[in-house]
Image 1 (tube, helix red, strand yellow):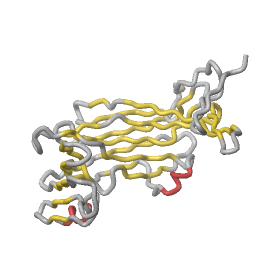
Image 2 (cartoon, helix red, strand yellow):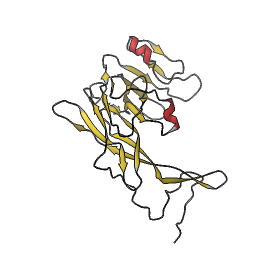
Image 3 (cartoon, one colour):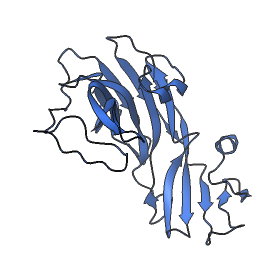
Image 4 (tube, one colour):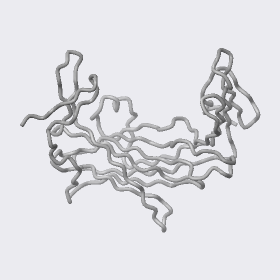
Length: 251
């Protein structure tokens, strides 16, 4: 029996197969591992580790402009909650490099980090914003990874973040509290040998002695810009939509 296919205007088609063979991860017992350790500063918590796998066996169908189907590398995302070690105070997760299974999934990238767990000490009735952290790719499986700077293994990172309080007054009426750093997620690449694991330690710092605020415009019109208020009282309203990290760090 042939499989019915549904085409959504050239967007991703279903994976190959009709009833679909089992495409779950099944790491072999002799695996090598990516060992991730995160230190969550006060009032923060680690986010779940996002592990991104590729398969050249379980490929996916794509639709070209000429309505012909072609194959691309199969992908799978797995989320893992980190576990706290009482003796070290570190959160840990071990990610199998070889995802195994019928598809022979191979780990391509991991993404992890921290976000605020509580913001009441900074602003009353504030909403917790997004996460910050690191994405680490392994080798050159995806073209986008080519731009990631290559780093050594094991890898230890200690970026600094500051609280960012954002007051929305146009699209919504709320106050969000985020962590603000040089980037939301720094990107790196580790070149691994065939049967080599990796160890990554993330020791972020949160400096709550410096708080930057952003106040949104009441109307969306020319001349109505965000106001960025730095810890020293400087107010910038030039059309910028995010604070200047280097300015913050220099204060």
